[in-house]
Image 1 (spheres, chains in turn yellow, purple):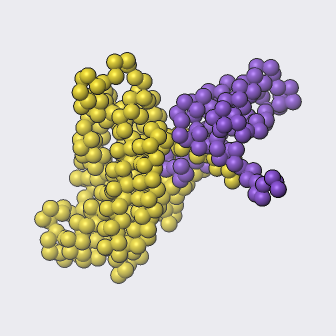
Image 2 (cartoon, one colour):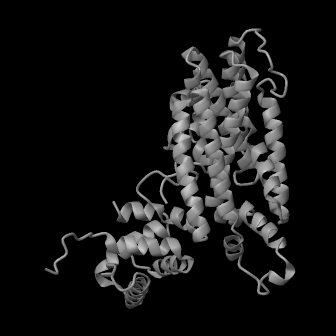
Image 3 (cartoon, helix red, strand yellow):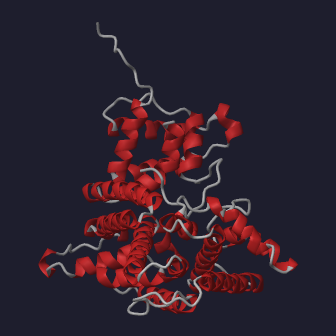
Amino acid sequence: MIDDLYASFVATLPEALIAPALGLASTLGLAPSRAVPWSEVFSNEITLGAPRLVAEAMPDLAPDVVRRATLAHLLAVIEAFGTDRIEDGQTAETPALAAVLAHARAARDAALAAVLQSAGDARVEGWGAGLSEPSYARAEREALAAIRAEQAVLRTGDVIAFDRYLDISHGKQRVGLPASLALARVAGWDARRARCLARLLDAVWVALQLHDDVIDWEDDFQRGGAWAPALAAYASSRIAAGDRPTMPLSVQKLVHQSGALARMLAGSARRFKAARRRAEALGAHRLAAWAREREETTRDLARREAESPGFANRSHALSHWVQTVLP
Amino acid sequence: MNTPLYFDPHAEIRALYVSLLTHQEHFDEFKQLLAAYEVEPELLDHEPDAAVAVRRKLNDRIRSWVAGEFAGLSARQMIQWRTIVVEERLNVSLSPWKESNLY
């Protein structure tokens, strides 16, 4: 479904943008070649297909509405990756890339509007009280503010407390909500269930973000900034002066000794657990099963990281090797 | 009576894997020695002396990490492992963003 939906978007583009759009995952550094379709870019179904999984809990929704919501979501996520890459300088903003992303934003907004139109004028009790109308404009503003806050921290080498890191991570994931919340609106969910869905998705996005920030920290650090050293420096600054090491530590040793990676992974596991519980309560069983598996895997990884600092990065670095030598 | 009832052909590799997972210094040295092994695949039959020395050193180091039980890497294995671990080249499509499915 993901590749069909993306193909339907590409088919609406002017001729000159079709080739750049087909190579977008590769251009953004998300895939090693243009031949990799979007459905193979991420190892989970939820990143690009959250509304489809959430819709399991809304059995009366028309398939066409779910498809539109999924299209809005996948374009929102792809566009957000594009903006993030351009903002942090990993990808150059060519005119063609800017034009493809602009088309993605327009198609995303049109798809979301079409989904919300299915809800008609019905006002569901409680929506509006702490639960805003699903909107990408607001989500985009919050995500951009978080990306800029992240850059400010990482580029200045500031130390940062864990709670502030979580705030910024949370802000970066805002675009992951509107399409699924729009489905909840169409399904006539009350505010309590819709808030539960928003918290479920928040937990999933931040859990995935924490995991990626652990696995990628060394590459991110080489590219100019990573969270793990900033969190490790904060942890180190809280140690009494007399207990601090007197010799300078390598960044890797500082990170390993701080326990920051284990803490990030434990935080990720807790959020997968919270997501699993909410998915079970809402009746999104496939999503619950996936969250359960991730909860167990990540909790185990956090434990091993705490026992043997650097374990998560070494296991990631050796994963392809071990798949080859231990079939 | 002393013949093992079961022989696990991958036991040595498993022991090496555990050692690399649990010791950063083993992992770093493993990667450094693989990186130092520079042999063109077509010249495998004429492995240069410097490469032989690197391979011997890595085999010795692995034996010390896994407490002696290691048959040793061939030149072909060294090239294959270097390609995967150091050059990160694979025969499959893998995105750097894909989450790890294995640890």
